[in-house]
Image (tube, rainbow, N blue to C red; front, side, top):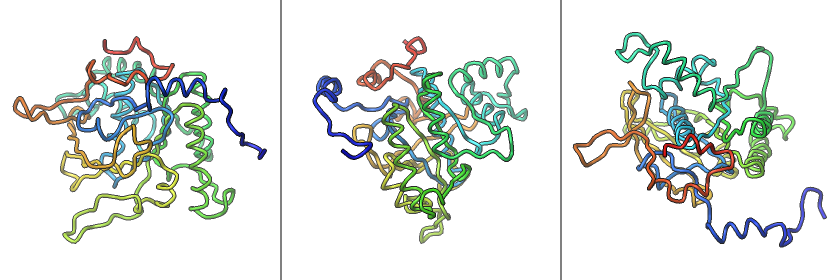
Length: 320
């Protein structure tokens, strides 16, 4: 037999086949938004790639989804996010989302330091922020993914985030010398680690160059706009593009460019609104005067969700 491969036997699949027969294909967990529910759910043994123009809201939406899994299910996340800023800047973003209060003194919802400390304490139990301490240090994606796997064994990490891909160290020479060859080798490693260790990997990839339509408006980024787009499409599972027509609008147009496996969602469009003051996304309830509906979890929303939760889920954190 070829090294690294085997022919499966009945004993290899007995337990998983029994579970599949009982529960069917596992969807991901509900993320709090009715508008998103049919299009995207987050399953641990998978990966999600995010793209969008700068200031489009892609990182905000990704963090919102992560925050909601922590709030709803007690999930924990490893963050390598130099594109957001240093550890304090990342923490300030998360505290704003957690408390609805800002560190900017010119706004009436300026946060009290005691509330900031309390928020940070809760957040640091769920978000592990990786920060570079030496300027000459480099971290490859594979090294980061392996770190996440090791941290799952110690801390119960459920997801790990790279924001953005450009900030990592990429050794093209080790994987054929070209960007396409590099992606074709590295992304399958990511997918395999995710499936084997039941951990979800998020990656933020910027588009190469902004495109404009015939009317001069910025075009919604597609897979081909991502650097190495074909390889991301070939090896990726779920790819999400977040777009705003202008940087003044508070409406994010979200397009599911690829969804795999199909049980977690489907391709298509949906919209979410962003509340700058709270740093939270919300749906519009067409009834009751069009009120804002922020991410929430009801017992009805949990239908089918429990089979997607890992053994690391802290049910004491559940809202019921």
